[in-house]
Length: 423
Image (cartoon, rainbow, N blue to C red; front, top):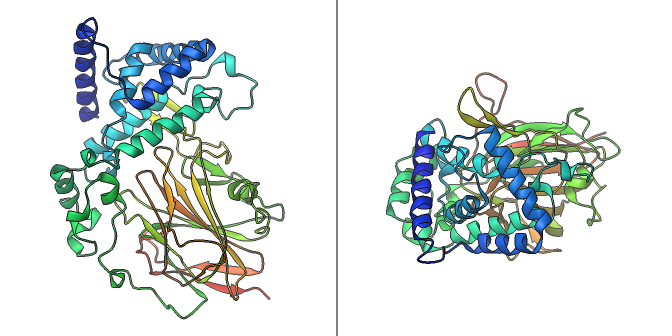
């Protein structure tokens, strides 16, 4: 939190300096910021709503250390600043709490400003009556995320200091001789989506036994849930995945897919990838690819974001019961297996820079083997959902934590579970 406040103070100083110089030269805004200015100038009603949202945010949290953008001009400068901010949320909170709080609070500050309920948006069928869900502002958020993502593909986004920070954190595993030579990482995203040095760094469990399902990624299994005959989760409150709560499998897979109702009475499992994990995902079993799709999200925060006065920080509920309304970018590959029917494989992106990517050779009618590479996340990930059809039992047998309430982190290729046919 202290580092977040320090960065905000630096930002405020820059605002002051740029304000003093404003008569001498025009402020150079970032690409996404310029597009937002053009949008607002062409839509006075939208501009007025943004100003109202900033005003409400200021009334709730007037502290400039944690809410730096209190006018529209300051908001433009804040957005420009964040377009090239380094995403050091990759640091685990337990290891580097101040750095983690810095980026977490920074992202929360970004969304808090546009997460204020507005009377003009009532009755429009939005997830929340706030700008982040309202078109065309929601569409602009995609532009903003893409701009940030593009920056993370530039050489300016990666340097020796960043490498040393990751190297000195054992959670990244850079000391384990797992990964390609670090000299290949010229950008942040090349580091984030780093390759293994060789396939033997992640051996595939029981490669010739079709009933053995391996982990698609370095990740933490979350459990198994049942789907009803209407393709909805039987779990009454739904299943939290990233910033949404999953209820409808049909909507998750997407109305434009011929397989949207193919998993009625089936089962779902999913695993969480931490930001320090190997962020390439692989096929957990073999078969023939029937469908490959990327489903774009609108990239808002997921709602239920507030200012916690008592602890002087933003609080965010990552299990907000919003339903699945295309909040995050997700991929969908339908795989036809020999003995266990169709399987849906769905990498799920994060609300911010949610980049889901498939390998070029992942195409319909291609035959794949267990362990073949499926794709990768650029910054903004990540979870992975796998869904089985009716008539198939999936038993999750990954090792449990000592408390018996959660699963241990496992590596890609290790055994995740066993399939069997129901009689």
